[in-house]
Length: 621
Image (cartoon, rainbow, N blue to C red; front, side):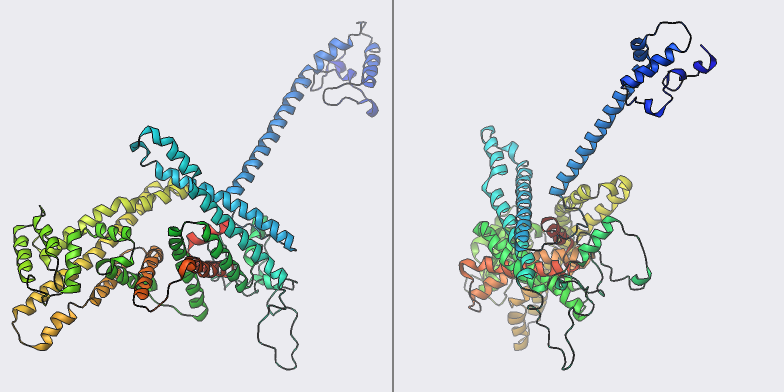
């Protein structure tokens, strides 16, 4: 074999065996045609080597690595395609469960498109609602399933997964999303923008523009926001109001698809009354799926969230800023709640009243004794004897309570509140009881607030934990201690008021003055029942201990209870009339109207939790 023939190509085939003409190169992916075989015959016979031609064995020997490599490449390619398809399917499945941030608004051009879009959204919301409710039921069941007999465990699990509560919750969410999406997107089509324009007429001689100044030239200009308004990300809750120093006209950037989706999302905006009407109708009808006893709680929460968003939008528009507004709202709500807890327990839920007693570490007979003195000037001896017979009551306090029983035996007395012996019978010192009460409340609330701080952080801030675990641990411990201190200070303020009032009363009695004004002050002013409302409002100042970002949420938590108590009290006095069988539905309709109007137009004024939940269930439109 010559030196030229000895130079092989990358496949190990001599160059003399390679086809030289372009038309003869019919080899492709390890397959050889007849033309290629003829060419090999010619080159083999003209080589002059004298060896007999062995086409099959030589080709098998030369092309075996290529065939094996081709199969491996083909298999690797198919594996990559399968992996890409699996990742895409996983991504699509994740989108069905969790909506990506920056999702563009859907353009709908007919009522049929609106109906199809609404049905898809309602089905997705119903499925998510069913899964969420079933998951919560299973999570709660885990804490008590091992304490139940084995024969009941399967039925409990089945009821948690497939019980009527899950179906009712899914039906409520599915109905709301379907009706809301249908009405929100169909109203601009059924009522054109020109017919729905209620703006004042233009001056005489001035023609009405086709589109209002500052809006995009678009046939559906009512769906677009003014150029002057900054954008807002529904998912993140970040506004661009503070970027006035940057002139957008002079900034030219190449936006990615995600950024373009953000631009389209934040510029989609409907008329305010469209969202309000759609939210009111959808919310009022959807809540009827739930049980009667749960409708009121849902309606209350939606109503206060609507008030929060509407007030924030209104105050920003009018330039109204109230310092410590959350603290003021919290204080007013606490005044109503604490007054109801002590004097009108029928106006708040019994479970909530029990929780207040447990959190404040107050004995139940103590509450009943103070209630009796505030209402009638005397207490039931039955409850006072319970305090005397309590094993932790000190001997001094037993004597004082016995004297109070003797004093009230003949009728009401001047004092209209309980004594220190009846408020803290286990301690004689009014000074030490403040420290002892704070430590007890702090120790009791620390694990509860610890769960509220650590569980969300572990679930939703995994990257921060991986990057800075000591810092996250310290911040959550500090937040837990701060929240526990907040409730401890709340109890101290209430306890200090009762001890201070009784000690002041004892001091004024010791003066032995015959002044009528002093007697009126002791009996009518110090013992007036509305002073209990005032001290409850003073307890709300403890919210200043909490982190500023948590103050609004705590105010929104207590507001439904306070409004319910005030409403029941007003109905008892005949000031208002009840809503009847549709009262909860009407309250929910009003609340959802305010919430959805704010969500579609000023979402930054809603709390982050509400905004993110609505975005996951409803999306941009």
